[in-house]
Image (cartoon, rainbow, N blue to C red; front, side, top):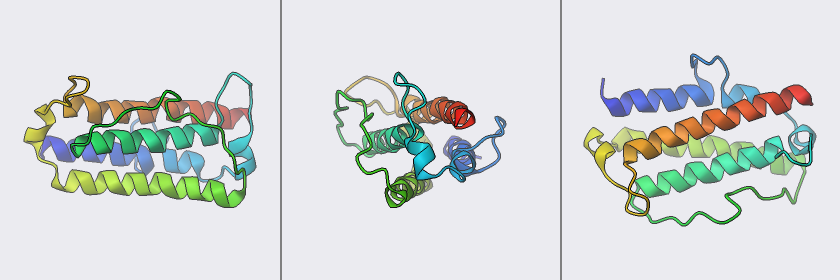
Length: 152
């Protein structure tokens, strides 16, 4: 099996597969409603919804880098307040997360293992580091979401 396929399987398992950590983004979020996702547990913590939107934007950021784009990360680091706390807006965020997963799955279909050694010019990190970094980023924030969900 190619390295690309192994990485793709890992990323897919964290979203909605059977990872060794036994929790996935999709399963963790499936019974969270808009009110719960919007609820601020502590003024110093992000909400579940803010974290989900942050994940979506970082997934797009790194995917764009892997497709050769130069991306400037905004100062707010993709943590922005939720302006529309409706159920429809929450559903839109969940759909955007699912679409970001589909975009990554499509990317991996045509990705060549040789490209893992390519360097992203803006920071000197390899594509391999970026791809594993976004996986680690998802898992880090998944842990936060799991804790916040338990506190609801």
